Amino acid sequence: MPEKDLRRAYFLKCLGCGLRFPALERVGLCPACGGKLRLEAERKVFSDRDGLLLPLDTPCVAVLENLRSAWNVGSIFRTAEAAGFSRLYLCGITPAPPHPGVKKTALGAEETVPWSRHPDALEVVEELLARGFYLLALEETPEAEPWHPDLELPAAPLALVVGNELCGVDPGVLERANSVLAIPMRGRKRSLNVAVAFGVVALWISARRAIPR
Image (cartoon, rainbow, N blue to C red; front, side, top):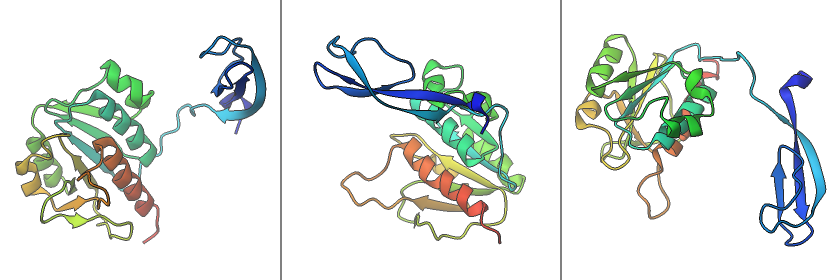
């Protein structure tokens, strides 16, 4: 990795209140109590890589159907880039760039992952199905297949659908899905945050696509 891609992180400890914290520059005073600081450790950290985008050989896209939270959307942008997704379809009321909440959690991924806005997710999934995409919806339904890492994936291009945080995926979209997955839950909550759930399945898809057939 070229040296220009590296930064330094400093780990500091307050001599007054004992707070130990990291910073990307040498800080003069403790942010909690204003006390003097002592450098405890430092390390190199990587900055983002310019121009590097490696989409999956078999295209994977995501349909964000009526998400409410701009922070969730931004987080999905960042995960989609990491997983090699080639496009995000932002449908219905889903917030889109340049919304400040999206930019805050996307951390620049909204500028590298192609995206488009659409008023109706149903029209989007019908178009994707007509283009040969396999539609995989992430939703808790009685018919949903429990997700596990050893599930097989079809060889076709994939479209992963996630829906509204409170209402779930539109029934019309679910009716057209080739399969529906639900992440098993061991706790009292019935589901994960939508951005977390997307991350679980998107990175799994990315890993499975990397395994030679």
